[in-house]
Length: 249
Image (tube, rainbow, N blue to C red; front, top):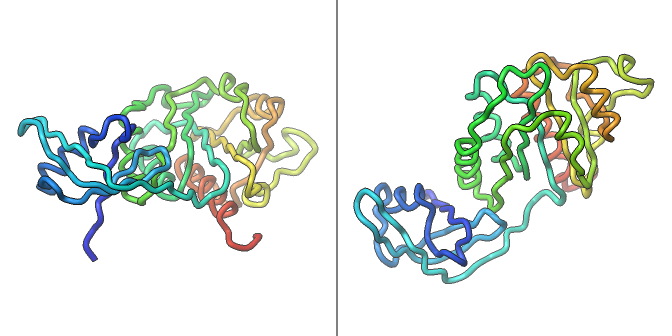
């Protein structure tokens, strides 16, 4: 089966042209000509079918889109999935996680600066490009939000209309009297979900207590001890699976 290319064009209905990177790919790599069919998403929940109208110079190609029809994308998961994670020192591991989580399905990435963080700066623009590429690769029409670094305590104080969880390795008896539950069991299908995953050295116990005070619940991701990027991806996968299961799990 011939590969079907999905292109990205934010605000397509206002400015009917492919993004700079996608225009270069369409014109230079795929050698699209006037009238060739295009399949495009605006990253805001819509697919568009149209035809190409290449332009610009050789070094700066452009590709305008003559829109023929549009379709609203039906997101498979019924409520939002957001991930807050402290990025690793090796940013390649975060980029891999972001790519795979986007392919699975997620609405937002929020990077946290914690007491034990090894990395305190991320290049949000590069991560945004990876999210766009993964969105197109997995044929989705919704680009996840990619936020820059935020201080942990400032982030947990933000309002969030849904269930808030913090995954950590402490025994629950170190925090309070209640039992730490498995994330998969705690996720509710129709309620937005935010899960926090800490740095390689985990959250500090004071950070966990602060999160509890801000309305977060402690959860476990299983019996295995996981690296940050693995834990983050598992958090997204568990949440996505619970929300998209055809029968109650």
